[in-house]
Image (cartoon, rainbow, N blue to C red; front, side, top):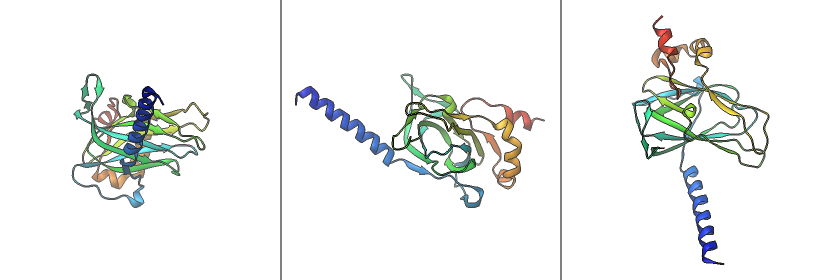
Length: 202
């Protein structure tokens, strides 16, 4: 084998190994309903996400960002991440709202993984603001409605994280009245959302 081919094979194995290492060392974020929701600790908040992932098994890769308020820091134009890496397993989840206890801060969903039969399918969302969310301490932070279309192919996937807080506001307050009395609902979506402040001012 030539030296160039040897280097290529080595680098390919190294990259594959690093990807496996990152995934294997990601901390699992567990989705909860109100029935099994644990109490959050100091400097944490709840994340509220709507899930409608069709009939697929899936997980999200989430990384914590260095930030100033809700603005991510960048280095040479690239987002600056902390070493913290997380994984949200959506497999077998029925459609509905779920809660997670998460340390306060700014986060980026960097990858959506929805296997197609026995084939892995990864969608990179590393620098897309709609896949970013902010967690405020002591609050219930709505981050969006995750929707995956049932129709798909081996090479395409229709998946979106949509801000539907305006239309889901009343339902959320009806279903989570006790929780929200202690941990008020705020918008944690990646783009600016003045709807909660507008309602509060009424």
